[in-house]
Amino acid sequence: MPDPKPPPPSPPLLARLTGGLTGGLAPAGIALSYALGAAGGLAGLTAGLPLGMLIGALIATAVTATLGLRPFGHPVAVPQKWRFVLVPVIGVAIGAYFPADFLTLVRDWWPGLLALLLYVPAAQMLSYLLYRRLGGINRPTAYFAAMPGGFIEAIDMGERAGADMSMLVALQFLRLILCILCIPLGYALFFGQAVGSGADIAAPGSDLPLGLQDAAILLACAVIGWWGAHRLRLPAAVLIGPLAASAVAHAMGLTHASPPDWAILVTQWVMGSSLGARFSGFPRRQIAAALGLSAISVLVVLALAGVMALALSGATGQSVPAVILALAPGGITEMSLVALSLQIAVVFVTLHHLFRIVLAVLVARAGLALFPSLLDCDDAASDKGG
Image (cartoon, rainbow, N blue to C red; front, side):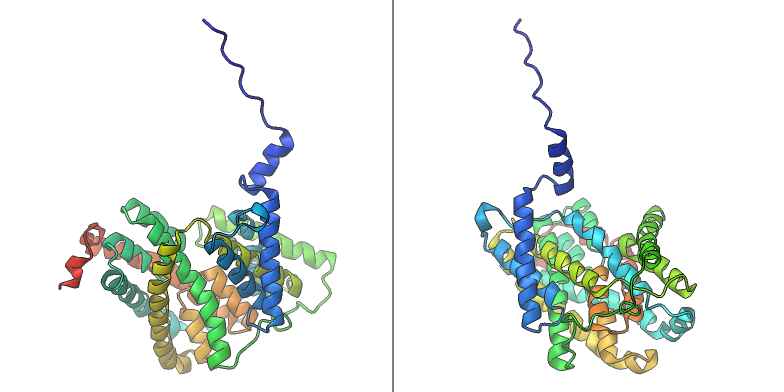
């Protein structure tokens, strides 16, 4: 019997550490992808786009990835987990906006929170019908793609229900992307609110010198808040935990500081580059089909949000743009960053998005319990006929 072959040598320690950090991606490719995002972001800032760094980085990386271009032989790809390191920056910055009389404000905002009970199921129903009748998508895929919140939960439930995962991921992801693109640009067009270009993103206290004590407190809010929210299994723990810890620290007077402007810009850059890089690997034909459907869905749901905002503006004491942003079907992290950068009712918007995401998951589960036929992977043609 021949001697067994010796096991292959283990990779060097540095290679193992780097592989775990980069998710197996080539460091040169990661650097080039972020450089591409930075170039797009700087171009967006120079052009005066609202949220120029975020939108510019997103467009530059998304277009390059969708076209299948490989800068210097490397695909557009970045470790998606890296952006979670910077999401607490948004939470800590938003926490600085929370006033001591926050609970009094929530009492005044109950009409908006109550309206979400109508808005969330209506938005999901409209998108579901659109995906079924215009897109010919099967029931499970259309149902979970139509969820106006809870990206991770929608993907998880859809996979267990036998949905077309590539189409589901594309539609849910494009929902987030289109909200990021349409809302700031729409505000600039319709409301003249072309801000977020770098000078207008200041949070309360961001103009104060950041001493070592303040920096330590903000860092503790980010780390302890994230850890605590994760242990409690709160939704969007990476954002909500640091936000809550920061709000408590500011309300107690432990600090009046906030993350500096450059930290928000770096967060925009990394998030934009990460979101754009996720287009790598999607077939162009599927992206085109999903983009058309998602664009119609987002516009329809935003129109619904606009109608409800006109009715709720007076009752909540918030402007129409603020209510639209609070109801927009984007991700809580991305929409909170938009509110922070556009300086629009940051606390009001974040609170409504947290409630919307929790409600979207509950509504989706309730719908399955009431209508189990939604899990039938049939042909969409049956619905088109009646």
